Image (cartoon, rainbow, N blue to C red):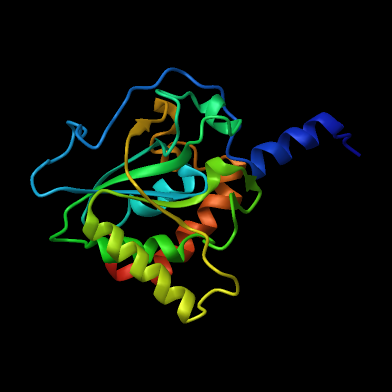
Length: 219
């Protein structure tokens, strides 16, 4: 019988269940005033969502029809240009988020909110699954008064209708800044789909999302 060391088992479990597993290179700063140059900037709006590990959030939203680009990064904290390791320690106040650039003529903010609410658990405080800490909090960082009102109304209606067993704890906060995560975090699921975390955590979310939102996905 092949012997498996305790270290090997613990290493596998860590890679399987936790988002914070990779060392961090330096990142660039992206704010709501700077849209990536590799996309069509005509008729583009921005949404910023935190729903646990940004690898999962990115994998879901990049497939939605009308979404031009999704950038993983950090928002809502008090440290400038934070590194991944710092954010993972929960000492910077940032949440792992995705900055979503979308064409409102093809997909509305309301539709993005619908995807947001249905692809994570908004009732668990500072936690999604085995990813625990303030960096994994459920959050909507609104870019306009209209986004704020829509997010708050949607949240209120979900609570009133008792869609979830517990009250929604999603933070609805004004957007202040966004720091793009290191390059190796971008398009993470597409680049690392065979890794344990992708197979056991991200893939089931993506497959479930495709079944529910099939008509709203890119071909």
